[in-house]
Image (cartoon, rainbow, N blue to C red; front, top):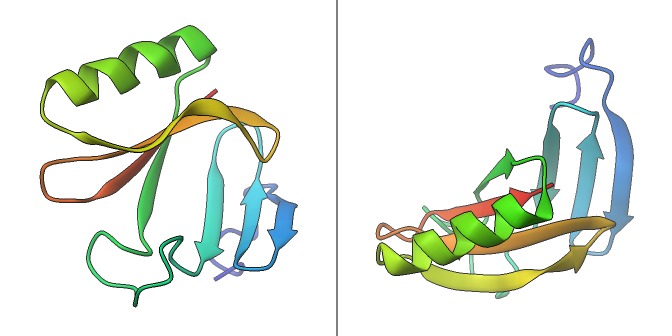
Amino acid sequence: MMRFFKDCGLVKAHDEGRMTLWANEEMMFAVAEPFDERPATHGNGTMLGLNLGSAAEVDRLYELALELGGSSDGEPGVRSGRYSAYIRDSDQNKICLFE
């Protein structure tokens, strides 16, 4: 997979147990075993990450997602050195909101 991103300037930012994550200033890409230890399926073991630029925007969109019927998969807080929150949409797709 790293050949796909070879010209993006990604560096390994996190490598611990179930997850390895590469990042640059514009994007992150991770390969991980599902957090809940169940088999990887649609919405489990896949995740979209959105760089929102500020903790306030992470908080705002996290709360809005819950109001719109999404569910929490991790309240806002610092993880792997970044302020982030995790939500699931109505189809159970996992979305990471981070700054």
